[in-house]
Image (cartoon, rainbow, N blue to C red):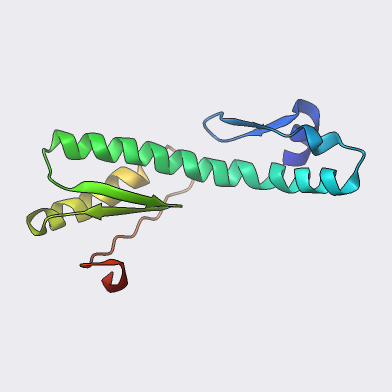
Length: 125
């Protein structure tokens, strides 16, 4: 279905409607066409994942500001967020992050969110 949509429209899109145009999908060159087909299959999944994390980051920042927390997002790596959290906010933030991230978009499946804490990446538990 995704390859068919790409062939007909010349693009695929994420759940939020962000488009990736793939003109090579109708190429007579088999290698170009097959690479384009792989892009057409992967982009909606990977792109939607990126959309979800972006929405979650915006919502988390707003909520932390609203609650006047000192915690701050430092880094996003694929589907993970790294935050700097003062000890006195740890319990609050460990409840807030999964709540905000799992509700970033209304989906037909639940989003599972785990949290870990540590003084550095190597000590995350």
